[in-house]
View 1 (spheres, rainbow, N blue to C red):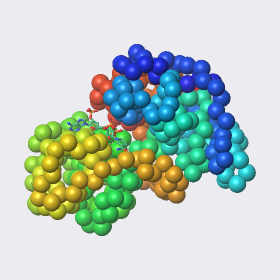
View 2: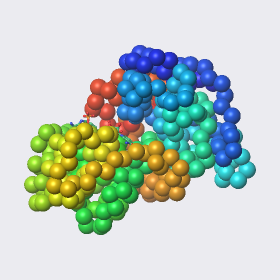
View 3: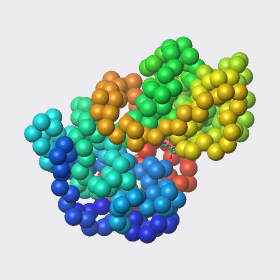
Length: 310
Ligand SMILES: NC(=O)c1ccc[n+]([C@@H]2O[C@H](COP(=O)([O-])OP(=O)(O)OC[C@H]3O[C@@H](n4cnc5c(N)ncnc54)[C@H](OP(=O)(O)O)[C@@H]3O)[C@@H](O)[C@H]2O)c1
């Protein structure tokens, strides 16, 4: 079967279509015939080798953390049947490899049905970034009426975070370039402030004492600490490099902790089905153009997810 493969680490050009053996599902696993798999910042990190090779795996490594397709093989009792339309979160650092392959084996509890009315291409954009936003909000544990600030608000994690925060009854302050303001407001932000190095000052002005918590999807780190009230919380999407201040608690987020949270993924799918979570596709490209997708993502300015089709 065909897969996007990383044989050596480097720039986008190292991505190639490779042939891999058809993966066989083990106990508790299903095999999915992939229609669509997204390209995320995590894939560019894997490709670059910045975090080293996936432990215990041999190249070519297959990137991709989320997909949608149809069930190819499912054991009795899994709740799935061949032909079912499904979406799944996938870890490219486990034996099965990542999502960007024709056939992918995943634990059944990483998979949920795609609701009617949602295409497989749209569905592929939900699992990983939706669960990341879900996890961040679960860990922050804010109460209705509290204020959440979001950086990188026009991005995938940022957008889902805004929408889930509004479902939870939070007040949301989000950053954006002027050209993205409408988009971010449309996602539900109550207040939109200019993005950039002064964003913390702008959030503080909008909140008085600072936000109760901040989800730092732009990975600005210590630069945005001042946006958070004394004793508040900052959810860090990558390692927080620096010191905290005023007892602001740094909450590290790792979506790998939600690989098997099927109920939470089903909850996100239900919100997408009733329009409270918006699935944004920037562009679809055939898997053969994975390198082009990486170039576009790394250039910045992509709104919605780039989706590879198989
Ligand atoms: N820890 C985890 O489990 C986990 C899970 C998912 C994602 N992540 C990480 O979370 C981050 C966001 O992911 P994503 O998928 O949402 O990425 P994305 O879709 O590319 O969104 C990132 C957004 O941040 C904006 N941005 C970049 N630099 C900024 C700055 N200095 N100030 C304000 N905005 C800025 C980008 O704008 P431009 O496009 O204009 O640059 C983009 O709109 C990535 O670093 C990703 O690796 C971590």
